[in-house]
Length: 115
Image 1 (tube, rainbow, N blue to C red):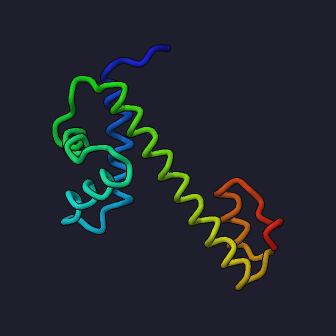
Image 2 (image 1 turned 180 degrees about the vertical axis):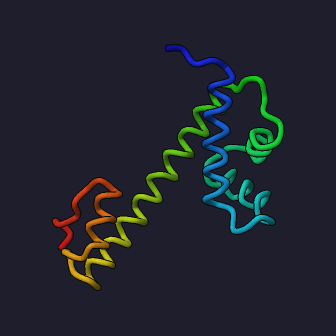
């Protein structure tokens, strides 16, 4: 099934919204969050602005792929942070604690080898 231009824009808009929500430190920090994301991932702040306030009819493949790469990199970064938190929780509570089991289920990997 082939995606329409509107479907590509909608997908990119979702990624941009998720990236913005993760990066913004509060309602007044959205523009600053876009600048930080631009520095980190190369997606211009104008792209974030447009996808939030005035969706374009279409996106270039370059912009779509840049947003996709940024979103995937942010997901990986969040996973690494969760893995670190799991290791700390294991050290404090023990590997058999329900919080460890729930977190490992969320990540989808058993970190028993890290004991």
